[in-house]
Figure 1: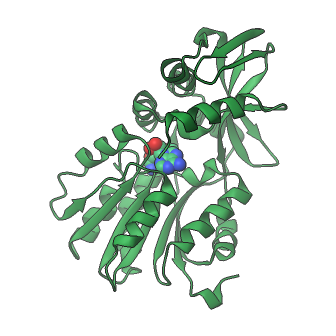
Figure 2: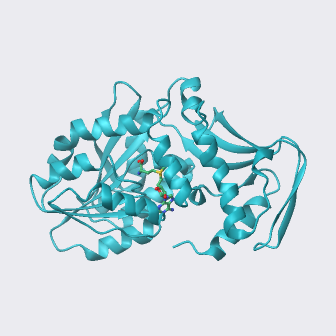
Figure 3: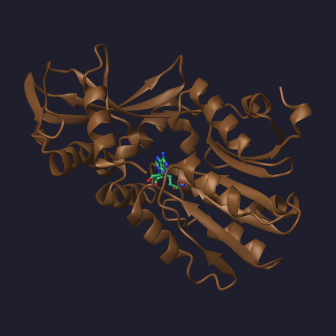
Length: 321
Ligand SMILES: C[S@@+](CC[C@H](N)C(=O)[O-])C[C@H]1O[C@@H](n2cnc3c(N)ncnc32)[C@H](O)[C@@H]1O
């Protein structure tokens, strides 16, 4: 659970970084940020959500075939849970479903519970907390013999840099038992212009999502960011294979944040880095899985927008590397 004190510290530490100022992407998702992210998922330029949904819709029966009943389902950073419906509906035809969406955004969780309320066969319990805290909570509720299915969709894994993603997958594995599953969605590399447009749409919805982080600091921490003095920027970092979202200072300016007792001066064109979205090659996923103690059992790739659904099965400890 992120407190106001955590937010204050993260903002002060991130904006004090000497080479590249940063703000953690977790704070993009207040009520307004979650609503703007939901709008992004409908943009024609943002193909990730539609690809994810097409794959889940088409391959839900194949995915579920790999999971011995009874299955307990949880989702890390569920957002609105719109795409998850396809898996839960398919599973509900086989057995009663328990689903635990985990999200730090209360408004995203409320939307998720509403979105999936019509699924008669499912019991849905939202957990407003961080990924691993939520996962540990769900793992502690499992009954003997249940298979735990963890969903991490939308290529949210891409927000972690590659070493941190390895660590995170290992931490997930530590919460699981052999035979449990992680369905990991990954956005794949594609032409640079297409990747950049997905994070810099002409209607400016992604720009509003990014700028809302400064507005949130103004609202919650007494900041005095003048939003029109900042511009949203999406960049591609070739070596790291990631799209980065930045906020560029359009002029030299000073900013103060009352709660953080913090003031800084930004140079003209200096940026604040707010989000990373790493891109993957389908063939690198089995290696990532093995390093974390999983076996990559199956992969499904979308034909319209390069994107993969990867089914990772927790390996017995002896088989982990
Ligand atoms: C990129 S969105 C993806 C939403 C949804 N899974 C999808 O595929 O469209 C990330 C979601 O994770 C949540 N989130 C971000 N960081 C989180 C964290 N550390 N712990 C829990 N939830 C987090 C956000 O509130 C947001 O709803």
